[in-house]
Length: 315
Image (cartoon, rainbow, N blue to C red; front, side, top):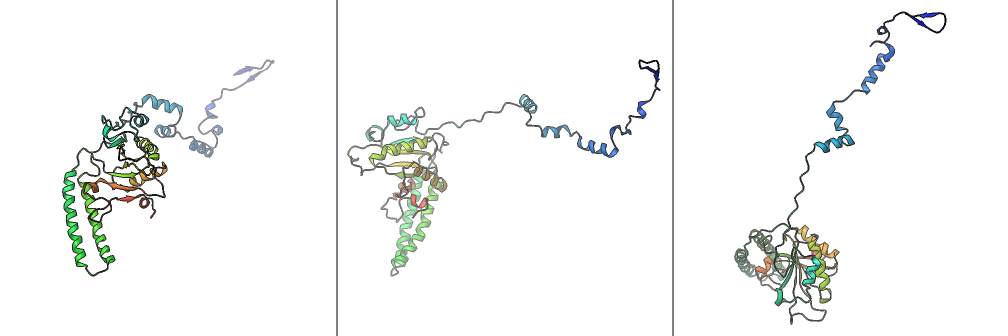
């Protein structure tokens, strides 16, 4: 083949088979070891493996968005107000401030709405509707009568011993009786039934009543305390005008057996400054009230289950 170069002479080129020069064995592709090195670094992974490393890329996210099913919305827990339609309690349609304005504890009278004003934590699950208070009173009363007989027997058997020794013997057995009664209360639904029974008791003076109840009401509604709260209404003749008088405020917890929750609620009350660390408040279960176990009961039991000093580690 002749190719003109613009001069008088032509360059004569032979037809050449380039396959002889550029082939799989040609050095054009590099030496065998160099080719092996390149092939090792450019191995294409399986598609599924590749996608696993690219799930945060914009194209991948767009592809997922086009093919993914729309997520199901998380169902919200319905609000539950056990005091709905009770005019002495906060209604679901009311804000806390509207409730406090409608029923201020300092002036709302017992004759108008009854002995208590109530507020519920609307986010608490519905409590069981069944409890057996009557059955607890009957069975618990029998336990207490047996304890009275047993205590008299201990005192008779240990006659002549020191009073300290007799007290130790009585205290040891009394603890077992208390545990049996609390277990019975739980079995009869007296701790988690419809009738709330386990509470911290606050006794604010008249000058602190409004602020204490406001703190308790707002914190209960915000799920920061327990299941509900109540405050005693005003009873003319029973309330004195001086600052020494007190009014009962109760803060109910879920279950007296849940000591961690009992402690959590108490710590929140301290944080709200409605309970101080230098003066004590007490925790009571109405199981004791059902059985007539008051501060001066004949069975030798404490009327309260816990004190704030005990729960917070103080003595």
